[in-house]
Each structure stands twice: as C-alpha cells, then as structure tokens.
Length: 517
Ligand code: ADP
Image (tube, rainbow, N blue to C red; front, side, top):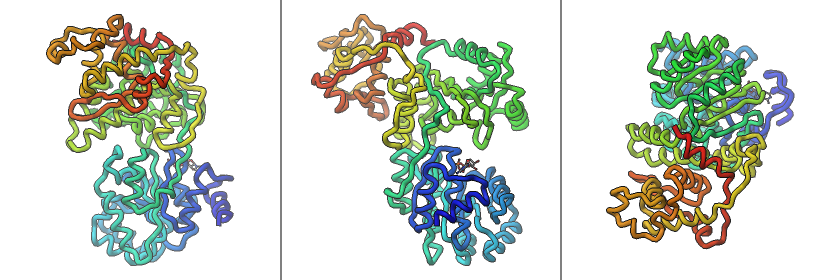
C-alpha cells in the first residue's frame, strides 16, 4: 500500500519522498484507524489525507474553517489532476445544489466544507447518498474549548460520522495542540490517543531569543538598521502600539507598512501589498496580519510585546524563514506587557475561559524567563518528547557564567511559605525587599523573619528572580481572580537543600534593574 502511496506522491505532487510523520499518518488512515496528526504549519499535513483520498473508494470530506483558502486548495488539486470541489457560504444556493449533485454522482475525490454546513439537516441528508471513506478535520484544535480558536460548529462533526452506515475513518490535523487540546480532540472525535503522530515542530533555521527589559524602540531601530536589506514583521499587542511604531519607524527613515483590523480594508490591502512586493521591508501589525500569507523571505519576526500564548507566538514567529534560510525570532519582554495581556484576557466575553487563558499566558512568560534552550521549550510545550538543544537560540549561545543562586532562591521560597502561600508576586517582592507599603504593614508582614531579607536588591531584581523561579518550576502560580504563588514540589526540594539552583550571570538582573522602560 505504501509503495502505491509513494508512487502517487511522485505522480501527482512531484515529490520523491515523504516527510517525517507523513507515512505513519497515511498508514493509520489506510488501516482504517482514526488518528490525530500534529505538525507545524507548512509541515505537510494536507498530503496526509490527499494521498489516501486518491487510494480510497469514494469521496473524502475535508472540514476546514478557512473559507478564504478553500478555493485555492481546490484549484491546486484540480491543477494536479485531482477532482476536488468545495461547498461554503461563498456559493449561491444553485451552485451548492449543482455541486451536491456532482458529489452524489461520485465525481470528486475530495469535498472541502466549512464546519457550519454540518448544522444543516438538509446537507447531512444529501450526504447520506455519498460514499465517504475518510473525514479529514483540518485545524482540529477548533473543536476544543482549550484551544485558541474554539468554534462551536466543530462540535457537530461527530454528527457527521453518524450519517454514514459504514463509519468513515477520521483524521484530525492541527499545528497547535497542547496536551489538553489533544486529549479533547481525541475524546470528541473518538480517536485512540495512542494514534497520535507529533512531529517536526523544531525549525532548524530559526534562532529564538528574548530581550529582557531594554529600551525597545532603540533596540528596534538599531536592529532594523543593521538588517536594512532584510524583510521582517513586527507584531504588537494593540492597534495603538502598531500606529505608534509605524510613525516611529517611518520617521526614522525605515520604509514601514502597517496592518490591523481597525484600518479601512482598502488601506490594509494596499499596505499588505507593499509588504508582499518588498516595497516596504518592515510590516508592523497586530495578530490580524499573517493568516494565509505566504511570504518566504521574512528574515525576522519581532514581538514588540508579549503574545498572549505559546500557540500564537509559535504561529506568528514561524512566519520567519519559510524559505529555510537562517532567520531570527525575538520577543522584547517588559513586565508591564504581561499586564496588557491580562487586561485583554479580562475583556473576553467568555468568562469561563479566563483561568485557562491566564495559564497559557503564564506559559509565554515562562518562555521569556527560562534559561534553557528556547526551541526545546517550545517543542516540549507542544508535546514532542526527547527534544534536544538547538544550539542557536539566545540561551544556547549565552556564554555568561553560571552562578549558584540557591541561597537567594531559598530565601524567596521561605518567604512565600511564611506568607501563607496565598499572595501574589508583587507583595512578596515588597516583603523581601523590606517595603513599608501599607498592605505589607497591614498584613503584619514586617514581623516575618524573611521581611527585608533581600534588602540590597531592587524590586525589579527580586521580581525577575521570581519570574525565573516560576519558569524553572520552583514556584507555581494559581490563576484565580488574583494570581497567587506557591511553592512547587521542585521548590520544596530546594528548600530542603536537596537541589541546587543555577542562573546565568548577573547581567540579566542588571538589565532588568536599569533599563526596563
Ligand atoms: P500544512 O497543511 O501542514 O501547513 P501543507 O500541507 O500546506 O502544510 O504543506 C506545505 C508545503 O510542503 C506544500 O507546499 C507541500 O506541497 C509541501 N510538501 C508536503 N509534503 C511534502 C513532501 N513529502 N516533500 C516535499 N514537499 C512537501
């Protein structure tokens, strides 16, 4: 069977060999085992159902929320000689009727549909007459409330399975799935969790780094001037920040385009075009920019502010270096940006999701404070096991000396315990540095033996140390209505003197102390 698959890969797509993971997934499908395929954007997920669609009798249904990309995908297949079609809200009722008739006649190998379609009983009824061996669920994370893009209509997919007498095999595909999302996908689509294939998250041409507490505008201008011939994207968290940066960079003589949802469509399109044609080498944008954009020569992606979670970060950062050439992905971190994201999360209508969103934000903050390999941090977050160090990121190439900070860490942990493990980071740092803040006095914390135990350090230094401890898993955060910190099991080991804690150089704390804008 796989020989046949390889032959089709060559005949229809012109490729000689499968990429990592593709064969395993295709094998699951051909064996009629439902499975979950987790691969990064550009990893080659589509072939995992397109090739089986050529081999299986009947019409494979592909569910995708990306209506704007559907036509392109179908056109590409038709060009390759594969009969395919789509049904979504861009078609007239007459066109839908005609297409369905053709589908019922078995004219297509693949039928792409938007998930909303599944809510129409008429449509489901029409499908009954079609032989469907495989249902491919693209962007499968949309089925999970834990995902970053929950779509209620995805929950109707299980109804689709029931429509057919011989239940089709299901193949769920996504680029961004944390363990919780994966579990949800498998449960809701009745996939055995063992049938999960996760590969290829590491991007060997990307060098990740985090710049802590520097003058961001100065950093940006210098960075762009140094890379003046290169193309890059700068993501900011708010429209206002995009507007400000756009003015700042244009004034500095840098040809810059901008994009956010608050701009008139015609202007946005023009700006996008300027960037796509390299007329503007820099694009400043909110996360509204990038979906479906395939620009291969982006040499750097800089996040001017912290993104809201690792999923968004990796997707946005991953727009760098699509051509495989070395590229940079930088986060400019300042602690107040965490507040901006908290604020944005708090505006969300769905109150139930807030704790999850805060937890995800914490993952992003941890990324900024870890001293381990950044690439390894990301792929581990996405569920890859045994990831190795990349040797390229800001942490792997950080040659500053390692210092033993066990004693300071023990002081912090001990203070957290004495405060009852039910307070936040800020007040804990105030207690440690001996602040006379009213809250500190009112709670009677001035009487603690750990009060003022880190007096020689600034609040920012101590906060930085605590962020590092959270990232290293020594302190945990409880995301209630007010986040509180407590000592984790690993932290307890440090308190007991069973574990040493090392941190790279004092330079980081100095940077935080002196330059935070
Ligand atoms: P995804 O859906 O995971 O984002 P795609 O399926 O769109 O990724 O694939 C990304 C690109 O990689 C496409 O241009 C595709 O043709 C190409 N590709 C996929 N599989 C292979 C392969 N085995 N060999 C070479 N190129 C491949």
